[in-house]
Length: 113
Length: 109
Image (tube, rainbow over all chains, first blue to last red; front, top):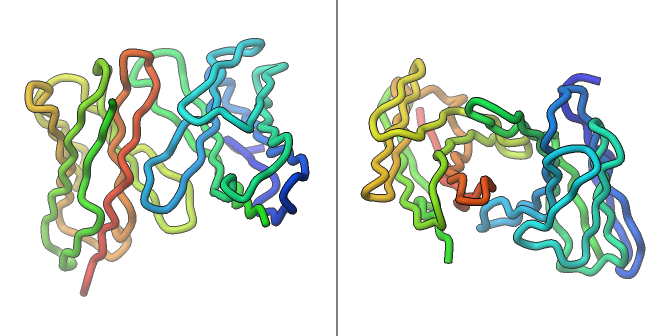
């Protein structure tokens, strides 16, 4: 693994189905984030985790859940997908000190029909 | 509410200089970031400003005025590979990033 990986790369999903987007890092960063990116809008934070075992809600958490069982993995689950969740989803990690810039995974393009 | 404003699209000529502006209104300020995002790819970090003034990094420079809620990204000696979207983000009082919608920069030969 090099950096941050996300799976799947893309997915078409029927409305009402459950879906888990996977994110794994090997950078040993404490903080992890899930964003969605929609045309004409800035990245919007869904959920975050400052360290393993803790999670928090971002700007648009409804319909999504996360878990952080260990440092490396931060899956995002859509319990019952709706068309408005069609988006590109980015996982990101962040360091604890210094500039604390965020590093992004390659993204998952999700279409809910 | 929190708001980050940047132009939607800009066009510039290869070899020229372009300035991309960003204005912000946020609850608290703990630094401003610029990211580059090529089409279909992930954002990548370009620069960070937390104090007023200019930060220079090669062909790219970023300026911050906290009193005016204003930043700009300056790109010199433009190359075709600089065609991308440039995202401005502010870290707020909760240490979360608030993102602008991005400025799509088109470089013409």
